[in-house]
Image (tube, rainbow, N blue to C red):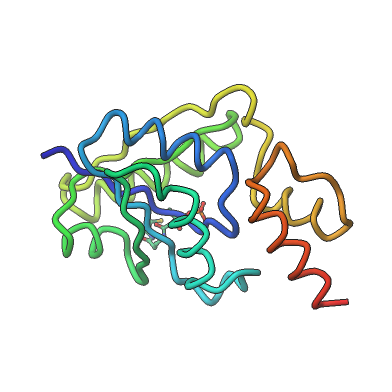
Length: 162
Ligand code: PNS
């Protein structure tokens, strides 16, 4: 069985992430989308909230599972016995960062964790979670960025902060 992890912060999941999840799910038997629990990043949504968003958005894709992890990706991958990490590449600006992570993971895992890149679909290549948060913060239109229920959660977060 071909299994892959799609790790990330997903703070919050965008249509860009969802596009990568769907395409990974067509290419692997099982895709485990895993939210990094990293308090140092000071996320807007808790790990539990981010997991719930991903669960709701992927509920109709049977071979996608949602999980969370902390610590090193290679340790998590070893623990759940998955040899491939999936990442999305938007523009050349992503490339250096992603190459470094992929090579670090390959080195640290002694070649046991490979990285497979999916290039972002054109309509989503401008999208980022930080951009989405900025739009939400000023009450802008998120209809092309995230599912409606995620937009509601974002607006609610920023209303709470006011
Ligand atoms: O969505 P993001 O924030 O770009 O995802 C980054 C992520 C989660 C893939 C990366 O930070 C990660 O795997 N962190 C876990 C710690 C780790 O394994 N670091 C070593 C590779 S640099």
